[in-house]
Length: 477
Image (cartoon, rainbow, N blue to C red; front, side, top):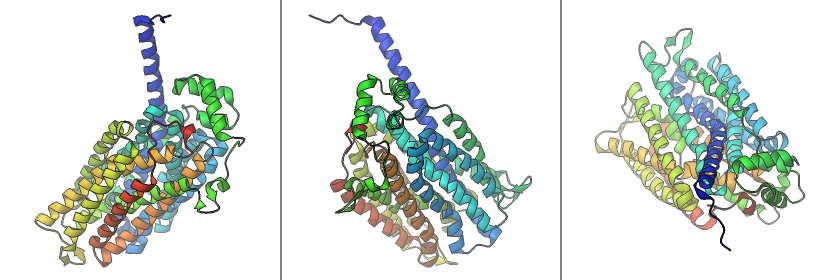
């Protein structure tokens, strides 16, 4: 017997409900991804202040590297603790705590009277960044249907690169607002570089307010036995009958209410194979040297002949490239899958970094700094932006999407926290050593090493990374 058609009105009602559900998912995913915005903002806003911090505190190259990368140590600690925190008090409360730490760090960093005070406040901000780097991808993966999880997961990286762009733009505008276009100059009661660090207050307050309005993760609610609350969230997000979803989640959790660090280990390989995959994904994302572009690019371009304002303009243009190309990832990740984007990205990154290494290898040293001219300066500038473009549609967003979805429900928060910790430690190593490379041998060796890491990452993805496109979180093993 043939089923009766639902009719135009039935179809319209179903479409309306589907649209409302998608809009609701996007709203709460964007609220969570604001943590990613602050992640990018906090780590990039110091870019325009680097030279001013060095002058204000008469910092050596080593101490300057510590000031810039100190937040990364806090981020590593925050990421490591975020898994336990998220499993203990929930994803939503943990994000709100991160917002408070962002506010406190912005004020303390801006008003720091000594370099060590600045380092301490930057570490606190780093803890907040570490929380956000774990909580946002975990939460977004847990409230998203499988068919759109790649796009919503990519919002984390889009928020990061938007945060980087806005931070660099604010830095540039504050420098322009000074009488002599110098970040050391005063704007009202304090120097322009201090306003750069204080500007983070605005997005931090917005983030805290928006987090208070989102629901808790349904996977966390089921894990804690709060079934009726989970049922409400599932009906608003996943668009499926709630009981089968709850049954799948409970089955994936087994008899465990939570997870422990012991669940990540294996007797034969130290960590479970899937944990090693997450750790190596996190390492390679940083070992290609992407954050050197965002932390040190203004100083780098000044060292090759650009003025302060021109260097900041180039840095802003580079961040715009990163934003635009992240949209490309959002449009393609659920269609093409995660592995193809990573593989293509590894190839293009290897070539562009190799060209940057070549350009700086032939640069003469003047007053202790490389000077590019003619074709080599254009090769370096174009290659840097191609590098950012390739990273933006591949390793930038895809790593966070994979880390949010590749682990099973029982270990997701802890495994993501461990992987993110490794990501921040790798970031710290790259960011701290680059000024030393720059001072001792120029950037050529550094870019050569980053290119080598990118080449190795291709084979890592080819042989070790599984495709997760379209798979339910409960099917991850």
